[in-house]
Length: 179
Image 1: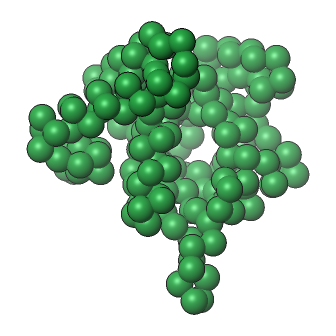
Image 2: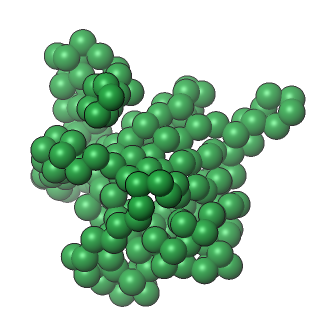
Image 3: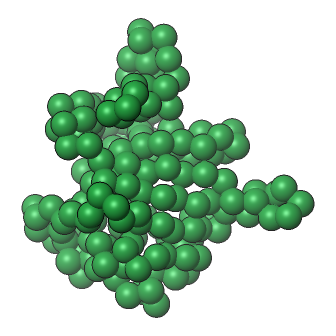
């Protein structure tokens, strides 16, 4: 199991363009629903996923700064799109373009989160996202304190976005093939 022994295979998993990985979590990020595609790609049985923190599929090469921005956006009650590399149970990895939204009850109160993940555009992934994430990881790892490293990387992204005159979601949308 990848999480127990830290094994990373270096092998990328793929899923079909017409498939969507779907999961739902409670307010603390614990999985309450995982569709069949999620189970297949991540290599877990439903019983292994339900009740677990969504970070069960967190890849160590995914910048913490991107997750901070994701959670800050959700805390502001806004949806977000983000490219994410995840780790399967056996140590393989898979890339997704995630769309994370708030789940609400009939009274309109936020009860958790819903994430739909699609196959990312390979050109965008290889030419923009992977180099950006590598730069962010380098910044994060320069600091002895993980939180300081994460915040330095967030500041880097924010400066980059300010220079472009846009918010993070606008930047992601400019990367989409239709954007």
